[in-house]
Length: 253
Ligand SMILES: O=C1C[C@@](O)(C(=O)O)C[C@@H](O)[C@@H]1O
Image 1: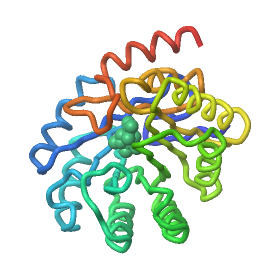
Image 2: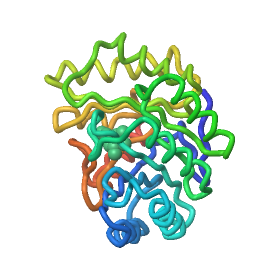
Image 3: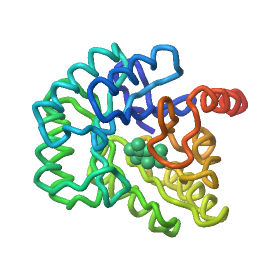
């Protein structure tokens, strides 16, 4: 299995890496959140730009990305615009989504961008190709905030992301019962052991799914999201608690 190297962080070996979302609405809030990371066990920072009040003004986005980049030192930075249809804060047209991601991929300020799988095949392929041409890695993502698809469907979507050459296929789904959490974990294990040639990221959301955010090293998910200032999705726990549990499991794995 190939690992993914981003700055000093190797994703896909050892304990799952901890990613913390930044969800400030203004540049000031965003930089204040970033300043707190130095004292926390954070491996990757995700800027959830759909929360940013000026996200439709690309100059302002680039200005904030530059400031965030320098505030983070060597911490890897993931740029994400999560669309409203996948649980994000704002709606966006396909063309605006395309231009925004192309601008960030070319900016030199981010290490990774998040591209939603169901943005249209041609757009997904173009964004991955362009990001790679700038040395930027891509997380392909899919979210279902209402239910957990079947194991076969979960694996199918993760394989599709891999076929598009996303560096990190990711899926987040909502359980309606405990069995759904097992379905997500079982799909993760089968994908990781049988089909994946790169690290993958999976999670079952909400309190019911929290176990899936802790057990990635055992079932095959290479990165997990934890909360610092504010959670960006249901079920994220504070990063310090997350790190403690991940370390306990790592010692036994
Ligand atoms: O895709 C994901 C995963 C996530 O939805 C979660 O459930 O932790 C949180 C989002 O910020 C991130 O972009």
